[in-house]
Image (cartoon, rainbow, N blue to C red; front, side, top):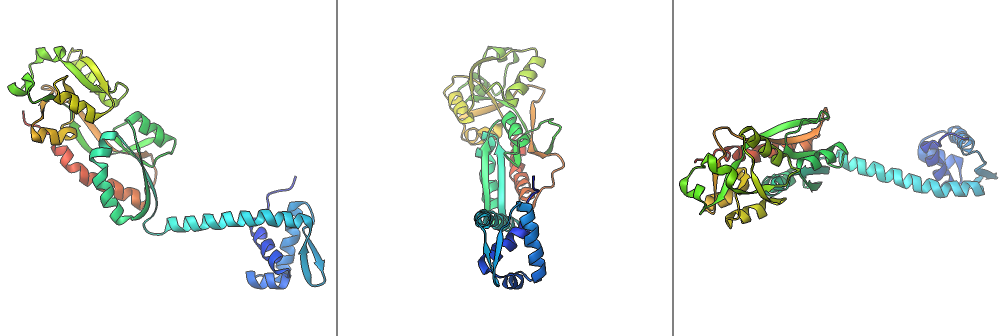
Length: 307
């Protein structure tokens, strides 16, 4: 069985097939004529058959040579295309950035970050994969995305760059008794109907663990995968939700929703950027993280809700 064919010899072979002359081929490629001749003999050895015939001073292809030329042209085209693509990636502002983010982050954090990012990297290709933290971890570990904006994870293969910490609160409609009283009666907490984010999420698990330590079990009547739908149902008085105030910042500001502390003990979450441990971040990735840091500053402040 013959070994792999040298791509440099294929390039020389393509030029020789076009010129039909060892002398002209050597001149174009800035090599010696004997060097081209030696290279073609080696190529024939690698291919395991005769590729060239000499007719006087002219070189012509054998039938096997014609077949090799057909494939060689495709190979050289692919190699040139690869060089061109890699060349573009090496230039300022060109490349790709694949982001994964929670649906909440996609709505509240990503838009202003991308607007700023595109000013610095206008020719960058950007893709965004929405998902909950478990989905984003899977996408990162299988290299479908480069960075994930999500809640903290202890996955050993990933590094976590913290952006901000938020605090979960009870969120109720403005006409709810808790909103009118401006406080939550501890005895009433288990009696409420709750509208919570889906059970497989990290947030649901944190809420469950928090109230287990408080010796309480919440009555979850509705489980949703949409924060927007959750807020609308709470507005209608269908139930109480547990959210970070920045997710409902507009509704709280306009007075349609009211946020109240869970209790004396806080339930906080850490948000940040996840990426492969030890990965050397490129300029675009570092810029994206820096912009996320700037966008996260007001979110940290929004965790402080006055009772």
